[in-house]
Image 1: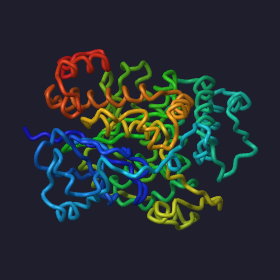
Image 2: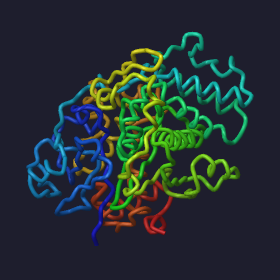
Image 3: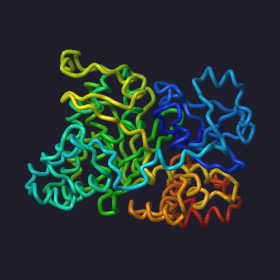
Length: 455
């Protein structure tokens, strides 16, 4: 059977992205498979990687520095072929630690370009009966101090959304909020996305670029998988409680839909799946997300056909952007700085949140047979003590164990529920040696047996 297992494409923002946001650990490990990172952003979203050998061992999010190292589980035709495919081989198993400098270690670090996000949130909440003073209470946000170059912390922004959810009336508030965030794109750093040539580039910038993450979807990072025909984006949240999760999912999905529609000047066909049951306010979902909806699924996800990704965009007329500063998308990405319509100079952040960093580390580690990859090694990679790392994760409302289980659960659900691979293939892909242990792990993580997940 020709099986293309899901592949996690590493987030890319700079030439040293793999050194700051990948599965970064110092220790030599015997990896059961390898992944790749793509240098060319335009190709990154729609291109699969052709490999020979054990395709089912292809791991996700691990990169390689030396192409010769690819002999460990996965073989590639040649170094020249790698280059012709636009693949940059960056590092495998042994990667120099970047420390914590490029990771948002604290939920109180100010990294979110929050002026437009706060303004949009206030507009929606106030239109639905919320009190302005109560909305900002406990957030540390002061409206009279907000400027286009103002930065917020994850904790501040999360607190604001908690207040909006609790005070604004209506089942469609989350969708309105996502749409309101998108309506700000011409005035904020996202205006550079008008230079995207196709949906492939646009989706990459919106969902994978760290520089844009902090001014569009600061609490959400999408994990990207693909098969022969589709791209699947699975949201992972930072600083969001379980009570806030469904609300945040709706905000994120609505924001992606609205941003793509606004920038592309047309509705991009996307399909959505939810783990929740079919809601009573299904009309709100259909109005803001479209009709391609499914519920009671293994994943919360966005899916898009690869054929759609390659279609050129009908960008807005140049006259509509004439008032904007003519900074190209390439310039914003390379310099990590931009100037807004209001004239404010903004330094865009090329940093990964601590929970997302941990998720990627765990994901790569789960594909190895090494027993010495864990919390102490992660702490060493970040140049902090184990106690400090635990404290920082607790500040985000999570723990190393919780993130491990989230990553493992998503991995096994994707393998069994979506790709419906055999137990042997799934266990091998997850780095689990024996099938009884694999079945116990699946039951513990999902509450179901492998057979039940394949239904």
